[in-house]
Amino acid sequence: MLEEVPTLSPEHKAERLALLFESSWPKTSENSSHPVRTTLLRCLWKEILFTAILAIVRLGVMYVGPVLIQSLVDFTSDKRSSLWQGYYLVLILLDLSFFFLYRFRLLVLRLSGWVSSMATSISRL
Image 1 (tube, one colour):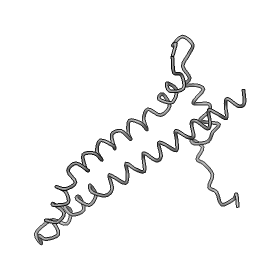
Image 2 (tube, one colour):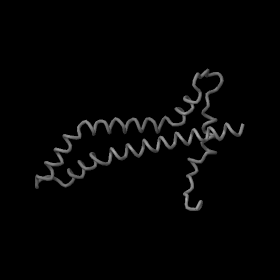
Image 3 (tube, one colour):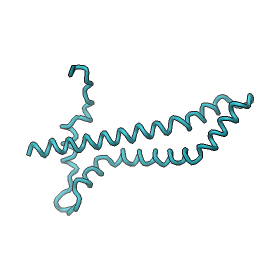
Image 4 (cartoon, one colour):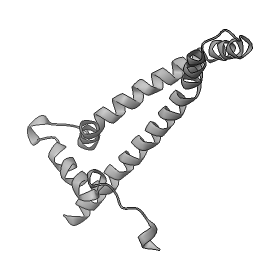
């Protein structure tokens, strides 16, 4: 049964995450009042930034969604419309929202991986 569970990629293994976590830990000269938060931000800032950008794009798509839906209705009723315009509208309406949700879930999983690797490294001390 355990053979059916896929293995983690090397970049997501607890040992590598623990080493990265320890190397990103604030130095004593930095006087950080929240060292765990600082370390997590240092380690995950790219994923957090990318997910925030996707959240803003998703918010924009949700805001102009009714206009895009009307454009899609106009596209389906007009025979002269370009097929690429329809692909473009569907891509904006569906894929960006799902991509954001996927990246957000991935960020949450990585964050939980960091926390579990931190707990593993602390338990070894």
